Image (cartoon, rainbow, N blue to C red; front, side):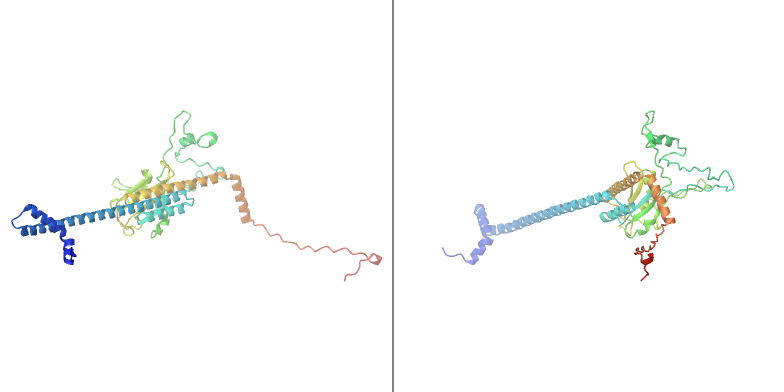
Length: 389
C-alpha cells in the first residue's frame, strides 16, 4: 500500500470523521442528488458541532466558576474562623487582666476600634458627686444650728448599706445579722427581704478612656440636665437626660440607635450634630448587679463611616463589655481582700509613725571622737613619770 500523503492525512484528521458519517447518512437516505445532500449534511454537522462546543465550553466555564467560588468560600471561612479565634483570645485576655480601671477601659476601647468598623470608642465610670459631710446653716447666728465640738460624736457612724432609705428603718433591719455582719436573706418571720433598687438619680458618667482622635473625652463628664426652676409654668418642657442614661434609668444593659440624627436625646460634646450609629453597654459584675461603668462606640461621620453597626460588630462590643465587667470585678474583689486582710490598728500605727517622721525627722547622731587612752608608763626614779618625748 503506497504511503499516505500529507493532504490525505490532513483531511483524515480534520474532516475524516465528518465525511465518513455524511457518506453513511447519504447511503442510508439514498437521495436523488447525493452531492447536494452530503453538502447540506456537512453544514448541519458543523453548526451542531459549534453549538455543542459552545455548550461544553459554557459548562466548563460554569464548573471553573463554581470551583473558584467554593475555594473562595473555603478561604473566607478559614479567615473568618481565624478572626473569631483572634477575637476570642483578645476578649479572654481582657477578662483575665488585672490592672487599674483606666488601663482596663483603654484596652477595651483599643479592642473595639481594632476589630469593628466603629470610628470612635470610649469608656466611662459611673460616678457620684461627693457631698460635703457638713453644710453651713442658713442662719450662722442661730446657736441651735451650730454644732459644738462637745456635742459632736467622736465615733464615726458606720456607713449605711446601699439601698437604705432616709429613715434607715428598713436598712437597719436588713443590716442586723449575726455579729453585725451581712444581713440575712430571710427575716425572723421567714419573709424574704428584697433589697431596694440602686438609686442612679445623682450619678453621672466620667469618661476615662477614648480612642485616637478623641483624647479630649478622657476628662469629660456627662451629667444630667439641671432640674426645672421652681417658678416654671405648666408649659415648661424639661430637658431630657442624655441617651446613655437609659442604661441607668431603665436598667438596660445595652442601648443602640442606628442613626443618632433621629434621636433627640443624643448629646454631642462639641455641640455639632452628626450622623451615624451609636451603641453603649453597661459594665456589671453580673446580671442585675450595679452598673460600675460603660463602654460605647459609634460610627459618626467623618471619623466613622456614618453607617449602622453590623450585628457582628454589635455582638463583639457586647462581648467586650462582659469581659471588662469580669476584669473590673476581679480587680475590685482583690482590692477588698487586701483591705480586709489589713488590721486597722496596724494602719493607724503606720500612719502615726509616718506623721512623726514628717514633722519630727530623726536627728543624725553625731559621732563624738573619743581620744584613745594614754598607755601607762613605768615610773622613774623617785616615783615620777618620765618626761614626754
